[in-house]
Image (cartoon, rainbow, N blue to C red):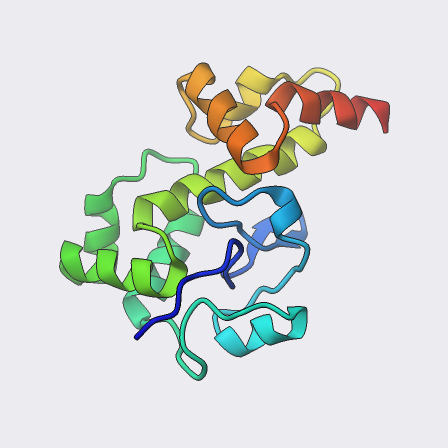
Length: 169
């Protein structure tokens, strides 16, 4: 039986402007993710005194790894679940089960989490001419109200506060 996922499960690294980051699970706040584990293996989480997302010794199935690679390569496009199914070659139900078991979220929830994280990193490193709307749109968020609510839920501050924090630094 799979143990429940911690707020910040071990997820693959995301390359963002030369930085490697760990991707928080749906609903996790930035303060819940103090460690920068980047491996797919649960044993890597042990170095951060965390519980692994899946039982010890298990590695995410091939379809999950293929889907994550596809997501990272096509993040700024209109990703759909049918694209992930075609890229992995497994049934929708199988892909959903494997993502829930090994990542703690659905495939599209994972996509959303990656997009929020990338938007946050872009806000933190934004130039003076960039605004919240432009950055949100770049990562596939078209409804600014929903983006702002989801962003605040994940990171504990509004996107504009993150942008202003960058301006103060």
